[in-house]
Image 1 (cartoon, rainbow, N blue to C red):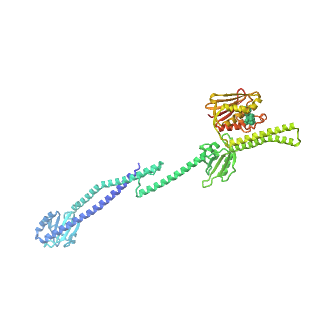
Image 2 (tube, rainbow, N blue to C red):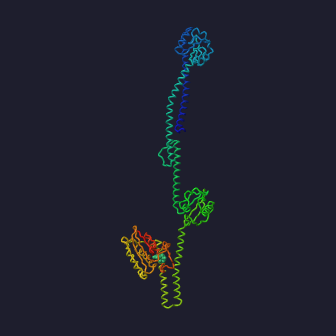
Image 3 (cartoon, rainbow, N blue to C red):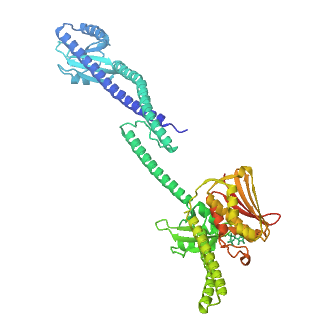
Length: 580
Ligand code: ADP
């Protein structure tokens, strides 16, 4: 298991503290030992000088000298040797009188040779007399028989005293060690607490929460590093947010576009295909990341993309696309400028444009056609009248025909103008509460001439809950009038017409039905188209082919709908549904 940072810091601080402490202890111990030894040597010197001083004033002589040496040595707790100027030992605390003579001549002893009158010489060496390491101090004296006073301490005693210093130092080390441990622990705890706080902030950032913490990083190097990294993260976060905002905006734009957009990278892999393009090319989101040749099944589009990837610009093409292939698109592929390269394909749905174009062309053709018939007739009759004046009765007939065709043209132009106004939403609704019966009877009265001429029967049926509707009464009268006029025109003599009003699902249905030939089922929806006639040869000569188109527009202006159907018993039935 890896050691935690705190453990490592603790171990490092402890090692440093222990090493410093040990070194300090060693240095102090060594210094103390040195000083202790110096003190011992000094004491030895002083004692030697003191003895020398005592001897120089005293009177001890001969055998008395050795006894004096023993007495003084006991006081000093050391070995005392009194040496004559020729090197003979005249007194020694370790040898009795008899043994003195047997002792070696001490004149060659280094401490004796080095001994001064005031300054004692100190030498540590092995003593052949007592057979032990001794520390000697020797000084000259002015006693008649004694030339040198020598005091010796066994080095073991010296070592013992010095060792005590070492033990004390070790004791001090042992006492200081727990303090060092505590200090190391405290410093590692403080440091690791800060590091843990910084690591906590880093974890929060990596989890995606970039809210700036209130934690104070401190002013030292660690704080500076943490602050700099924090500022970088905040800056990165800000940029990321900006990028994701831009991306979301771009995705919203792309997915809201009616144009299909497909983007390829330099290798021809799909990078983006928006919702419109997915529908047009019949692919799904899984296309992203795949090569365009596997995704785009249309050879023309593939060819355009290949050209665009090669840096070229292919001519825009019109293509049938979509699920049923009934819609028309313009595909335009272009290379993407910039270091990443690639290509972009834009698909425009121009079906409605083409359809509107077609409708406009058909409309112009229809209008021209509708106008040509009466115009040709008028011109023919005008020429006939102008070439040779016919007899008045014939001239009268010609003028009637001219008048009829002129009236038809007038109606046609009036209907066209009305449709144009409805298309341009220039006709406003003046909604009031309308009495249905009043509208039905007014229409009946308007068309009474034609109805009577064909000896047709008109029956009214108005349900009690459908007596009134909210509508623009003039426009509603136009609607009903148009439907009844058709019923009269397309039904044979003696036919039965029926005008009904019923309430159904809260809406009011106004129904105009007849017992005429009805409408072929395939034409039921088409009769509302402009200029559409079921059978041109059998259409009513006064009709413009625009009546039902105007009806539908007017009904839709009311928010209602109109439909045509055939009655089971024969005849057509037109139902206008007006919202309540
Ligand atoms: P028109 O001016 O020719 O009557 P409309 O738009 O009013 O034009 O009608 C379109 C066509 O619908 C008519 O030409 C006719 O063929 C057919 N139509 C309309 N009403 C009836 C009906 N009651 N019975 C049979 N056919 C009808």
